[in-house]
Length: 568
Ligand code: WT7
Image (cartoon, rainbow, N blue to C red; front, side, top):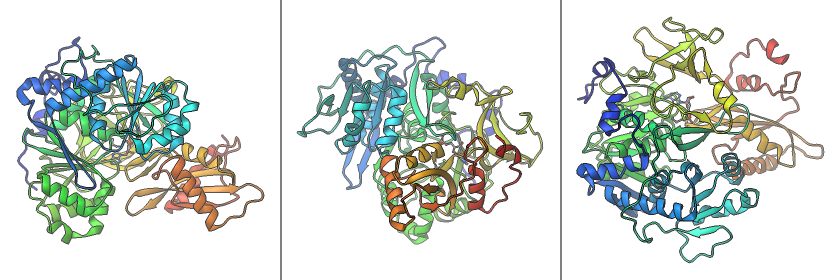
């Protein structure tokens, strides 16, 4: 497919330096650097104060519009409020909301106050919320009435959580530690002294799942904007006149790096739809707002495919210029389908919570090989390593570990309170993504799979340990193992194996009860889609669950040699 491109991959690759991005952002080494200021005040100073920054719509079609000046003033208002509560620079402030304007603008406000934004997916149940607030020793949480009951359930176990800010309290009675902030009703703060953060000051703390232990806090710094600005501009191909839509929820990194920072650092108008999935609503939304750039995900694309081509034809989607995807492997069929129905192909982008920005991608203008993730972004040195020696494989088609040379601006600087876990991500001078891929003779990367037991369901990572621990808290469960099971739409879903305590009998009712228990305590994404009662959960001699045996069975794959693992 031919496209008119703003940048050529080859041109950008030659003499690439991240300082291009610093210059465009007006940043010089040693200057103060604050993402909140960069994404609002700076755009206003560039003469764009009246340009729409956010056009928001909810499931009932209610709409709100905010210019860059509105975002500037309202984020000041939130920042001022937090400072007046006594929030100190560096303290964690959690955002626990649906996709309401307060989430997007509050994010900038937290950063302007010098605090660390900790966004959490609002579908999390009380246990998932507790684990992450406890680990981060969070000082305040900003939430909505509809979610505050989950915070009330756990606040006694969180003595460090000093403030529970409710953004839509109205006249609802507030309890202990709760306080109301109605962002648009509060006295607007025209001028706020943005806290003087610098490049390495902590900015965003995103929780991500690993195989062992509870989720880890991936700590980003303000300097990440240097990567996010340029990749948003070059990979998402954002141009001043664009109307950009990112499907992702800011509870996950796509929703902050490319749902807040990337587009707003570029002074782009973005649209947000605060509603669940509905193919018809999505097409209507894009038609109505004349969306030009759309960043979505394979599971969503497969869900749209299921709704058929006719529905696409019933809408005028001629405004769409560039389509991108992230979160899981983008299957070739999805690319071919998008060519057929939108006349444009989805461009796969590969990255992670930890990388902070897109690292491997189908660059605009570069020929797309359907099913491939594309090539490293200029400025990213990538390879695949031999899993035993951690040396680059340098052999077309050979599968190895995806590895990146550390040093690009948005790589996380630590896992919160887990230095050993952070160090374990580096081998032989490379950062390991925890994924496997091969590189073909043209330098294109082909994703093979994860290199651990983490389950990727609909682009969301869930850690088996978190699910297994929650299962063990159910009165009927004696032992548990959680593994991925293949799924045509979500790529993978969670399947749980449990053995029961004496006195409990396997039944459909019990299985449903356990599923529901996990849905409420953790989240709908962590809920097992299937529960198998078994007395044979495979374990090593030292008692570690060997999930690989169960997983391979689900995927009909050979288990391979287990002798060394079983002796652990
Ligand atoms: C993991 C990172 C940052 C995006 C949201 C997910 C998988 C991500 C792709 C892709 C195949 C992908 C990997 C990766 N993944 N993008 N284009 N093709 N797999 O962020 O929750 O940190 O998950 O998602 O396994 O390591 P995350």
